Length: 378
Image 1 (cartoon, rainbow, N blue to C red):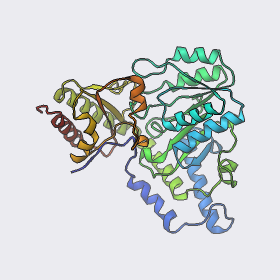
Image 2 (cartoon, one colour; image 1 turned 30 degrees about the horizontal axis):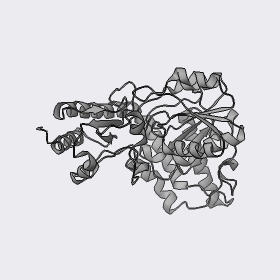
Image 3 (cartoon, helix red, strand yellow; image 1 turned 90 degrees about the vertical axis):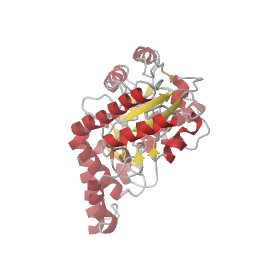
Image 4 (cartoon, one colour; image 1 turned 30 degrees about the vertical axis):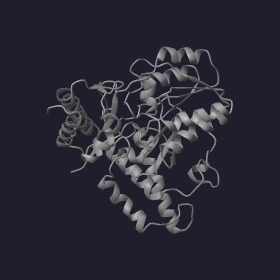
């Protein structure tokens, strides 16, 4: 028996999505940049997908640019906004995804001033400090993620957008963990650029998009072709784009139902762990349903000899989970998020993340195995 509880890393492909992708894998193979009938048919499918995504996000099709995923989109928005608007200062946080932190680090080496906003004890952005920084700096880009991929903390993205709008800052938000799980209305949200990866909401891997507000356009990041309205050179990932649009359509169609169901699974795990594993706690605001992703639970475990081998032992027990971001797998250092919030802590940590395909039985199985690993009577 294997239980998959690492949906923040990637989700299973929805069968409905696969069905709409298949014709573009086998039959409709034309290059969308070609002007003949084969190419025109594929081009029409791409533009139909773009229109569908724009409708769901309440923006214009021209504001959606397809990419290889969230990492490329984050890099493209940050780097291109810097060059387009001659930005002097980046305001970010030390617990962003590495797609942002590593990009910011490289830009700092190139001479861009970088400032880290303060965080509270649970890892939430100090909005008063953010406003202070915006008041005292000009030509600013703010990059703050909507939801942390490790601890699940949610940013008040509406308030941050309002602050950035007030002080004329370019606001970029990594929304990879929230697109497909929360609704984003781009007509009311003061965000200049946001990002998405299809595989986080039951779409295919290797495809995503960036939203760029039409009055905040940026220079292209990848050169070598006129694709994506001269914004991204290279032949489009056609069947990936088709699958992305369908996955997002399904996500919006079923969002309320799935949110309620997945939150119930998360709550079940919280209560089960509290009952069966004395000393357990939860990192960040992970256990707070009002201030964290309903798909993510980051568990803090008592000091134990089991901690060093925790993920390995869970894998042996048939449970796939994560110690943090899957993008850091194989790294010799621990989670930069937990290291920032809990410096010197020797407690173990595991991130469980849930999807519509998980069951209450999955949760009970994982809880029982966790309790057994820590030699606690279930």
